Image 1: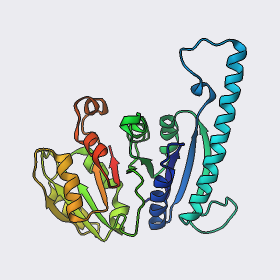
Image 2: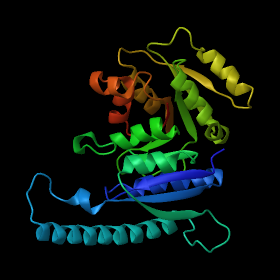
Image 3: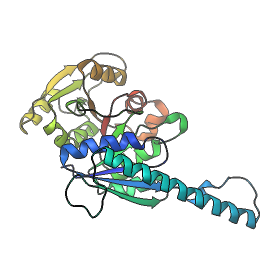
Length: 283
């Protein structure tokens, strides 16, 4: 049951994207959106490797703290405006409506995600920006540290009425794929169409796609099987989603360790890097 949606934010230009997707999920599941601003600490904004006198360090720490305050005030104004624009009630004293809460936590975003995510039903994050070295540690923290499903929102994509209406699930019989299935049952119940995408290397000891169809059927969910071919499962999976008109992809994440996939370029990394559609992942 999706009732608590965590949205960690910072000044990376992706606030509107993640909050819009969280709002759409909240509307479909009558859930509360909990926005957490990850406030940069003054010491982390100081220049590294530069010798400073005590006076200079004190002045720069004060300036860094003031800059953090300004960033927080600016972001909070943006968040309140966007919450109202997306139909969320951000008044803590108001009764009724889809609630949206705002809190601030000091520290690294990955640490905030780990702490706040463990009692959330789903975590909404922007697509990691590898070229800017942003977001990869937060995604890893959400999947491994918090152990929760993660909705990854790419680029400046804004969800529309088709969001999560046609859901595709990448199935290879693995444990992460099975966890993705279990984590997304509420979403599947509300979808109009479900496609099980299968192809590439399938785990010989794992359940088949036909067994997954039966699993869904026992829960009143109808699903179809769509097969794809190709040497690169990640690319073919995304191409198939586009060709069948899916608006959300559900898939397992990191069948191998995160470090191994980072080094050798596993399917999860390629899917995350190349996607132009929202993806729900579970490990």
